[in-house]
Length: 282
Image (cartoon, rainbow, N blue to C red; front, side, top):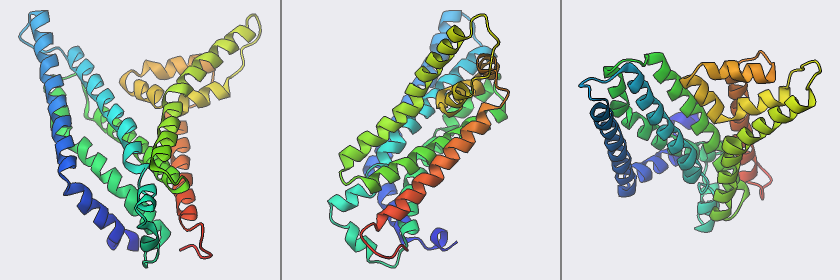
């Protein structure tokens, strides 16, 4: 595992990112916003209810809101951090110099990707002490927290890999960011609307006839991060999806297969296209 132990690109990117004042300044404001939200929610809930205690149901609502904040952080930050990984090097005319080093294409791509992933993971981990306040009031199990964390990691890796791929294929950073954010919005928002439209059309076409499974609708529900995220917070969501599509297959399995495949393909394309003008791929 040479690329993990001696990857100069990864070490350089980590040093530049974690020594930057902007990174820690952004982390400070993020944690400050989370603290204001948490303590403000607790204060308003206790004040409005007139009780001096916090109910487990109210703690679960707080956990759900914090989870949505973390999901928004990953969805809107991961593409921005990775969409300019290679294109910015090309714009600064430092990419040819980087390609003349002894580093392989995979080491360069993985170093750029993992530095961004490490920074976002650091942001998520930094928010854990604020997150852990919900355990003081009950209503949340450690397994709920683990599921959310693993879900965020899969999403972070998939959209980060996609950003690096677009950054390799597209010369301009701005265009690369537009393509990455457009794909993210399609997978996160448009697939949800397509799922609703598909289910409605299926319901209208099968009125008075035998109900048949909707595999396409189940696929749309499986690749939509919001649906799986909602199923973690409310297990009834999986039953609703199964009732609408008539497909008895866990959506989280389809989610892992799709986004795992998306990650591998994105990294593979980025590695292959990095030295597109050379005869030898490292």
